[in-house]
Length: 333
Image (cartoon, rainbow, N blue to C red):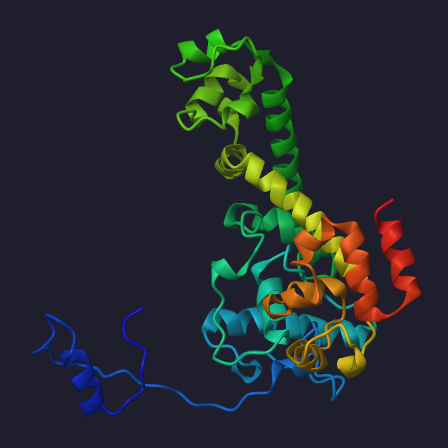
């Protein structure tokens, strides 16, 4: 990323000249910085509506972010929600497991101490948030709120149908190790029959091998082939993340009181109380996805969801409501 700074030109030259090999380098264009005021994003709702001024939606640098894409992503959500509000319709809120926009906004709402950039590493479910399946994840949502027309929906439905057919074909017939070995795949000779979908786990297995085993795949379109290949190669990791998302969504169904004063929660540290009072997370999932709140719970939303007894205990301490135990028990039936 180079050297990020906004010092005067002479200071920048001094810094550059301290780097081995750049002692005599000349700076053609010095670095610069932009200073701007922003609204503390903890004062926003997930719709990007301000808490204190209902009907006012904010997007971009004013929310503490930096970058064109980050601003554009917020603008889409703020604009859509402003219109939905005027129409009296339910708002659009994308979860962290739905899109990078969901990760971006969720992170901003927890507060920032420097201009925020959206990095893929910030998304815990990034194996599911891929460019090849963006249409599969978001087109139907766009259609529901009136942002996507019938043409694009037809394209989506055709792709979904093609995906189902192709995967069904790959799952249909299992073949012995000898069959795959003849293709040059290093399969253990254990007598276990494997279908074509399972073979994607082997590093030397390619799409050409899949077409040879299942001739029907020869006519599959490039977009569908890309989705199948990626999901086939990383199927174990993707399946694991899908289970994590299910647990996360359970947490998202548990609302937290808003506004709520956490100052009297004896089980929380002063730092935790300060963070929670500042961010006012709307759900247990939102609170536990905040990296700073790990101490409040036994782990992140994913890890906590795998320990229901501990989760209930944490939730009870967190909310202090008997109702929380009943709600969580129903979710785990």
